[in-house]
Image (tube, rainbow, N blue to C red):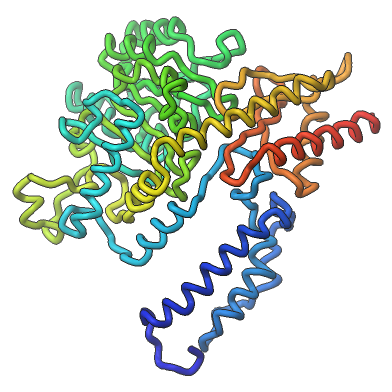
Length: 488
């Protein structure tokens, strides 16, 4: 390659290099447990290892891969490690990987139907498949006024529906009423909603964050919502958007959709349900009840890239009224006009999202659904939930620890119980335990704060995790706890 004329896409070179890369990645997965799960490097580590400027002449793939091995991998936190239990999972799988590979191969930019009809039509079809697996109401299917669209992340999905809801209400009450629009959610809702409000121009003082506590297992209380809405109406404000969560970030709490939905409907509000993490579990009949009441929702989102074996990014959003999105987000410049779009008989997904360009993401979801099938996907979810239950039982069996919130899906919230009269209610104790286990490189977990308690989160969901990894993780936690308590 070094001295030849540049041929950026040569099928034989792709075959040769592609094989080498697949081997490299397969070897990475084979040895993934030998790396510290959380990267242990210091900020700025890479600048000391790489040159100041790009090379003038080509280098060999072997040299680059050696650099990946020696310089990049130490700075990687291994989300696919079986010992990864932080945040929420970000699944990869062979099927997802192959779909991603194919998407990179075609490398289309599918903003309108005409730019690759298969990209638009496959997305419509696989999102109908997934909607049926989740038993979503028919209004979310493409056969009616609604349908699904793949966004990059749940943050994008929330922004898109918030903008649609904002513009829908402003068309009724007039553009100058923006300062009166009010958004409601619990204090357990993902910070993505706050960011969406900032971008959408919602006045910060009109973002109602309703307190949820341990009495309802951190779910939003319908009476509190009703009261807040009444207060705002009487102050001349306009309640227009409610976001409920199925599987909150901190503790996987589930908001009561049916009751909340009825309140939203009675007040003519847009009702969005964010099931980014826990939506995947609802393909299992025994967990489907967590989204009962979804018929009241205006929009519904889940991340196939979290717990559904589809490589990042693939956040699925369904709406009942596609026109609300289109009226808010569509543009029609001369340079994009084409016969199919003008005749109004195709979907142009550019009008359902923030950016113009979009990747062929439906390929990987299609691959996951076809290569694994519903039954395997259900077993996959059930196994992680079973492992989380086993971890919870291990925590309960050690009197030094306590479980802090119910285990609903595959997340366990727990902490080391502080000694009597502890100044900060175990904040430092648990902070130090978190730091110790993550610095060991053996496992990676994250934390949250619930009712003023510093709480450790153990989220099972990496595709390679098995019972042995959960037991080993518990041993690491117990051993570090012993050291900390002895030092005390």
